[in-house]
Image (cartoon, rainbow, N blue to C red; front, top):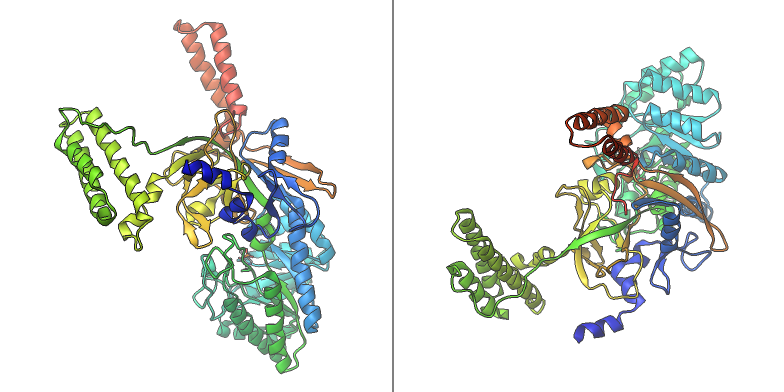
Length: 639
Ligand SMILES: *Cc1c(COP(=O)(O)O)cnc(C)c1O
């Protein structure tokens, strides 16, 4: 009775709040009146809207199984525009004399289509690229040709890397060699002299400030990259001796990624501003100040300085940065440099979502408990029943301890052959019934004992999801990063199940059991009861940054399908690019198998079976056909 009332009263607003979609969605994602997640590529309340369920249905008609990584191209455009517009506004408002030059750090998403789109759309803003290796440099040079945009070469550079950068300069690219280590300078000067190209040189500074957050190990005095103040002085002296101080044009630092606290960002800019001023005073040409990455994404929507959030908006970031640089340089009338940022995460995170279906579920079964115990019931079962009957608000902790004790005792007795399978099962039923009761009762306690805090998670349903955490959500597995996860439909219905999500690898780490919550984090996610014969679709959002290239082949689950859509003003959309995910043959070849050789080996085994009289020749034909189809198939669960 009580439950059905809750169901009736559930409104769309409740789902919006529960899943936090308006907090983390940055206006790009919302819920329709039909209770489905919609995409609003121009932001909140503006422009066209498309239901993700319609996109999925279109994919199904085109023969795609889940999982699919969906890229929404317009969102990428919007992010690049916003970054530039915000800097433009701040620069204009404050009367700053330099310009903003954004660059995209390729390592954040190296996929060809992503670079191509950034190069195309970014050209009107002279959005450049940042590269950290030879491969990334070659990729960048092949994808963009804007000579006003910056091409920043970070990373440890060998002779070939430097030569490639110098060749790019000969073609007119505005290329900078950023010194990560003092030893690189000689090589750059030597190769430049040999090729007759005067290199643009930058220095990466180790700042004293170290920001808080998950990924900020690259900052601070002990960071592995960058030059100390003393090493920077050596670089200046060497260039001065050679009469080449006019090559030193850029100061760079990188605090680390996802810096949640605006205070750290401001402190770093201030320190770098001082350093910049000193370089100018030493006679270096300068002109560019490169603040690296760090601009954070509010994954949990809490707008705090928690690691998966940020306590500032883009406007504020831009204003603070421009203002801090200006304040310092104006002290000594130093001309304002062009400001470069290398924002990767904030540029691409929003534009991809991982779509998947739920294949099955399992619940904690406490079965029906018998009124009277069978006569031969062991002492332990009798004790568990007593514990069950004695539960009250006052003895929750005690009952919990007893339940654990007797359950463990029962398991030992089973191993020792003293109880049978049915007796053990009965004990488990009582055990889980006790845990469920404790979980219900504890919500009435003012102070929940530590031991009891986590028990809800043990009672959670497990929803089996058709994807691999290792392949598609690497950071969720590796460093417990939170991503927003939610159902894509049925949002007008009350989600009655408390769940954790397990992927289809058979690894116990292949799961999501931490979810965003306005109060920090929660260990279960509310989802709807699965309906017989109806797919349940979910999405993991904001996965455009870092997840794609870190993925691995756990259990030989390969790349998912990747589909890009572009949404038009009239709410229509087209599937602009489709990349089929790995086939079974593909992933096998990554681990040194030759699919043709595999078929040959299976053919030989089948032929042997024919000779032994196990199968007929036409059975053999059927068997080989199955294996050939299998090799061509998707590595994920196909319906
Ligand atoms: C990784 C990296 C970035 C990107 O940082 P985000 O926080 O993703 O914007 C920028 N610059 C350098 C040098 C990096 O190593």
